[in-house]
Image (cartoon, rainbow, N blue to C red; front, side, top):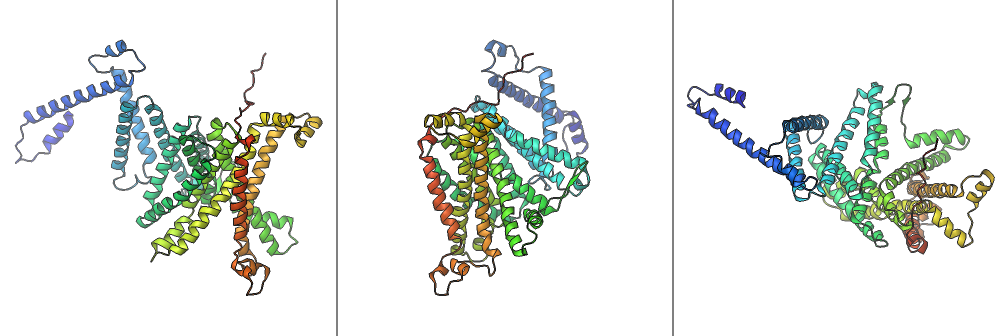
Amino acid sequence: MLPTIAHAQEDLGPTQTVGVSSSPLVFLVGMVLLAAFLARFSMGVINLCFLEEESLASIEKRHPYLPRMRVVASTLIITALMVVLSYKTIAGLAPFDGPYGTALAVGTMCAFGLVALVGRLLWPAASKQYIFAALTGTIITFALIGFQRSIFSPTAARDPFVMTMGLVCIIVAWRFLFGPWRPPVKAFVLGTFIFWVCVHMLSSASHAERIAQLLASGIALIPAIIWCMLFLGYHRQRLSMVVLMFFSGMLSTAPILLYDKVLRSGLELQFFLFRIVPESFTQTSNTFISGRIGGDSPYHSTIAATFVSFLLVGLIEELSKFWVLKRSGSSSFRSIDDVMQLGIIVAIGFAFAENVLNPNYFLSFVKDYLVSGSPDWAGFMGNFLGRSILTNMVHIVSTGIFGYYFGIALFSQSYMTEDRKMGRRVFLPRFLHYILRLPEEEVFQREMALMGMVVAVVLHGVFNFLVTLPSLLPGQPTTIGDLVGANPQSPLHFVAILVIPALFYVVGGFWLLTTLFSSERNIKERVVRVTDVRAPAVA
């Protein structure tokens, strides 16, 4: 403090009469008293934190309440390093990129430290895990945002080292985000990650965009909650598990969104020995179809390419949902119903994030029918119900049926035992076992998982294709009457083409899922056979 006091004395004007001897002395006394109070307070916090892990006699040895200089020095160094790294990580990222960004960043870090301290005092048993979860989610968030910004910067496309390291760090951080923690802790990590991503997105948007985004998010959350409550009635789940799977479903949209951003930005992925030039799924499908059925008309090639592109999109989305389902829910699977139900929650989270993040969905509905001009409630409700019911149900049916097959694969041992008792034999695993001597149970597992993925991808892709097909047909028919060429007075002109996929997926899909949920074999609790653990080799 002495240099500060001397500098303050030099800045005093000639008309100011402040005692040169008394003012620094009072200031120093005040600082010493404040330091003593803070030292006593911090030592009390340390003693309280270690009360459950250290004997009282050991704690009493730390009189006169001051820690050792080694502890003080290491704490200061580690704290300084964390502050510097935190500032370097979040500097330039919204909301810490304005003229007051530094002050806001420092204030945010201090506020989080104060909240962590209060939580440590009030909930000493559980606060460690949640403080760790909050720190982990925060660090991963700004690290991924920073890496994403560096990759999409103009210089990154010409530097293969930055591009490679950025992608590797993104993959490692993404896997670390779904670490092997308990469901409440993992849900807190993902919740912190989503919170900071939302803060960054809202801070980067204009005021009008921010209001529309908040309205769209609140409106899209209503059908998501209703769908969750509807399917949670079949089998009770812990709230932390439901929140975890919903957050996991939201984050499962990241691969398709990242690829879409790479595509829209025109970024070429430059690596050391090769480069990747991303192109749209429609363009890739056109190239593939033209090389296979080049003799057909361009009209048929366009329809076939559109169908293949939707299958590719469905494959990426279903694989992403499967990955988060397995990473987040494997420790809680006790029955086939559990796998189906948690898979449906993942699908609902995916649909919610898709409705909010895609500018053509809920955000567009809010801007077109509610914000711009006079509100058009009829147009808004029509689009709102279509997205809330039909598209949500497509994700629910696809991932729910995959969850059914994946559940059979997980519990294949007990499932096959029951089949043998009932005199049933699975053909393909038995055939491959006799011909190639492959393990029957392992073949059955892979068969069920592959069948579930194929069914989910086909259901997903067929729906997207049926919705888009009218715009590809001549005349762009919108009703059944237009499609079949009925006379103008025919009642078929009052039936929209979208009614067919709506009835199939909503009514048929709901009936199929309720039938699977009510099956006694699916309700029965089972034990997963541990097949990944092997005995160590003996020399």
